Image 1: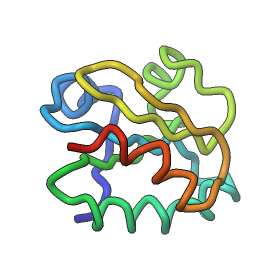
Image 2: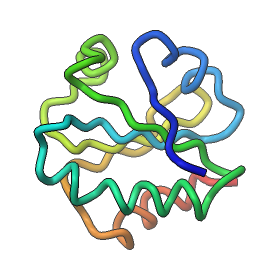
Image 3: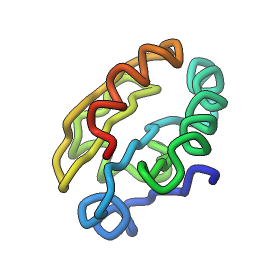
Length: 107
């Protein structure tokens, strides 16, 4: 499954009320490192389909959630579980590093 688009409007429903853990990639179109991490995020979405909801949030188009969670550098990836941030990864990191942080929160 491909990552879903997370917006300020659907954040509450898709993330805070999700029954499964959620990985959000906070990114922007102009961000080079974001483009480097995007294929990894897509692989994770496919590999963990049904166990982890994966979404992408454009920080330029959705400033509310970005401000609420203090996004100052992108890409920033956050794992939410039961409406709470349980992991935060800043920068373009290798897939193994992402999985090391994500897998412990996946059922």
